[in-house]
Length: 103
Image 1: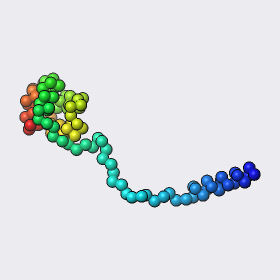
Image 2: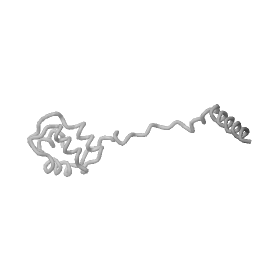
Image 3: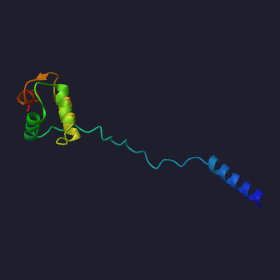
Image 4: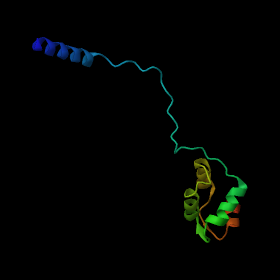
């Protein structure tokens, strides 16, 4: 009886291993990763307030982007917008940053 059971299990496993995988149901579009947010221009008032209160001047582009990255005030898309639109440079004030961003 034990031998018959062993043979049955082996045959079942062999049958499963030999079966082709099921066909895909439908091709799916690749999901957009959360890190691939679309750039979105931030609100003028909140940007000015953030630049005045959370950035110590003089500040480089890198320092300003770091200050923006560390705050929940901006969405991932808005942070991306800052990254794409703030030119390299050393800024003396929030006003200079706003001018560089054309806000």
